[in-house]
Length: 351
Image 1 (cartoon, rainbow, N blue to C red):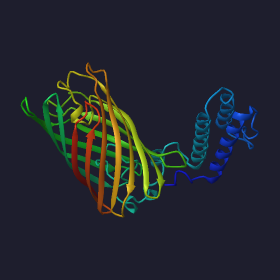
Image 2 (tube, rainbow, N blue to C red):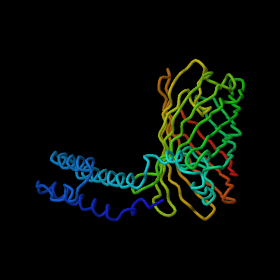
Image 3 (cartoon, rainbow, N blue to C red):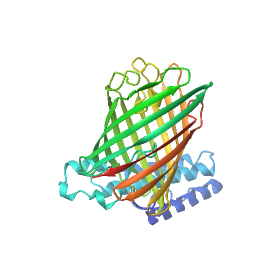
Image 4 (cartoon, rainbow, N blue to C red):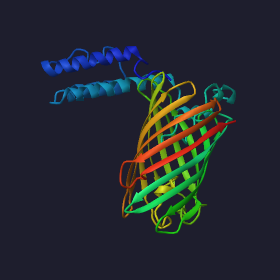
């Protein structure tokens, strides 16, 4: 992937010039000469630049002008990237090009989904089978009611159908122990999904992927919603420098999809939506070890007593080989609805 800040020097210089002239216009109240494009531009670019000039007539802070210039640069990069690609989304050309022209997924090392809440922006690649799994422990002390939850095997099977399309199957089992109640255990509903590669990084446009998730009502009564739930997760990321990466995800799921900790006491009777948002910063410490910091939030809608969960998470990955990785993570809840503490370990292997 290209570096975020140095991918297009010409666009960068033009944007810096635009910022300078907009700030100069803020003081002089005169129209800067280069606000309008010097060369023929697309309709979207002309419209945006005209909008930028008109907005600048209103009283606003210099920071707002800089933000408008930033969006102008993103628009310029998007137009350039679209012109370089024959299709709007990366997965679309997989239906038309021959299999022998697909990238070789084994040229890059394995990337797993399980080590943090924010998933990876890549698919496993054509012909690859990847198996991930692990164990997690959750602790919560709420109103003197202590709850311990153990979750395993956190299995995720990923099958590469094409270069940018993969099929996924999740299975999980939980044991919940509460001081003042009988313990509960059972499997969650089976989760199946497709992950689609959407965009490659080009300037300020992120590398991104989209997961379309569905459930099969196959779990234990205490954890199953007894219906087919669905969800979407849009994952995006930027390579900031050689060893740094910023990523995030935005999505939703019905019925507490894919998280045993979100399922209410009567899952078959309560229909609700959980919105999620995350941001993660990853760094490569050595050739074999990566570290990440992450914040994520889960917010329910349509429950009688809605919850707001915000969590801080930190973890490391150790790459034993390019096809085998181990992971360790710790997290702390930042709101009353979140678990007080959790920890987990696991790994992934590809074939």
